[in-house]
Image (cartoon, rainbow, N blue to C red; front, side, top):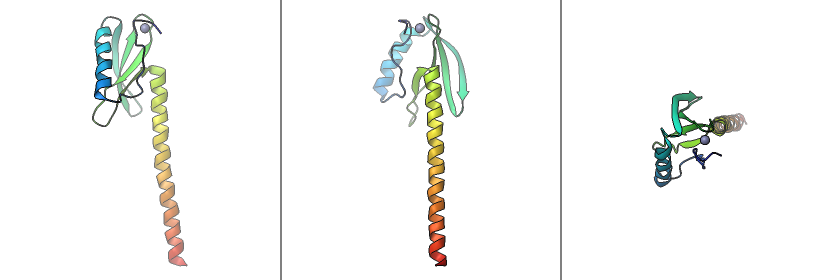
Length: 113
Ligand SMILES: [Zn+2]
């Protein structure tokens, strides 16, 4: 990893303090070696894209907001992270649907017996 980039990725910001530590490093590097590219939407996620001018690494930043913990990661890792998140969401959705179906069948069988 190059020295002008970030040495650490944050899959989420665990606390305001952690985010502030990150922001401090970010402020020192932005406009010097790290440049803003654009805002982008990927699936249901909206984030800012930054690039390192030195090593061309692409970084995705999502600010924490209320319950959302945000993240700061290399593009490839952030993408995988969002894909995983969406997959987990789907599993949860279909899992709940399945339990609901089983319960309905169970109640129905109870009623007709
Ligand atoms: Zn770099």
